Amino acid sequence: MFDSQKLSFESFLTGYRHGIYVFTDDACHICEDYKESISYINNANLYFVEVATEHEKNALEEILERSVLPLTACFKDNKLKYVKAGQLFDKQLEPIISDLNKFGDKPLTADEIQERLKKEQTKCNLAFYMFTNTVDADTRKKIMSVSIKYNELPIDVDSVAPDLPLESQEHLFEGQMPFAKIVLFKDGKSNIFSNLSTKLVIDATAIKGEAMKLEIRNISDILG
Image (cartoon, rainbow, N blue to C red; front, side, top):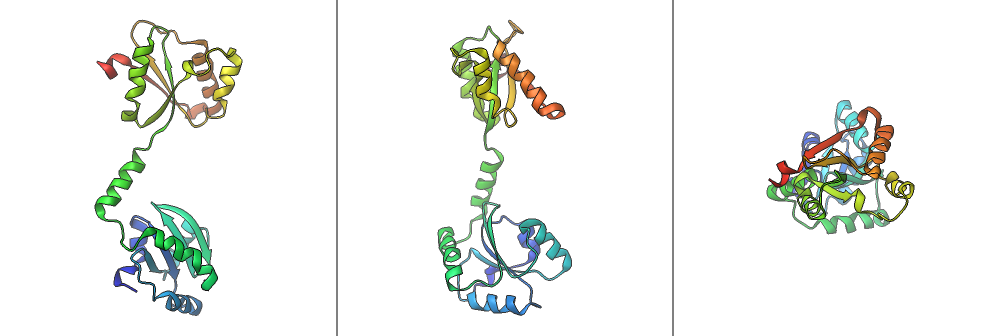
């Protein structure tokens, strides 16, 4: 076991969680036996975390939804993948070691962590784009091309299956309506949107209620 594999509970709470974490209590004999049985594994992405106080145990239970130690947990990019309770033996350890090998034998550098955090913070979310009826196809295409600056995955609602009846078009979007941002684009020439856009705004308001957020953007501010 490398010294770097010994991690304080505070460091676990505040750090970037990426690797296999073994949580033990030195007052627990099974914990000590388990830790001793796998201490030969010298991998910088295997961490041994001592959980000593009731406050720490309560915090761990909030995160892992388990209360009995020892616990073995796998985190990838700050996301909990799974938790195994109790002392693990040969067959049970095989998938753990397999996952550990996938992490490699070096921890993430500070620069790598910052890059992954930036990617997570700027991930693109679904957005329904709606344009006034005077916005031409070329302008719509330009707007779609700059959507990444807003961290959005855009859908020009009027361009999806335009030959379907209005009711069928509306149905296409119903499943994603709770998750999509609604963005209205104006060109200063008209305030009229398509019948489909109008119906989807009404649908979104009915579904989201007070949580409904409607964003209005002026095309001239975006494209100049």
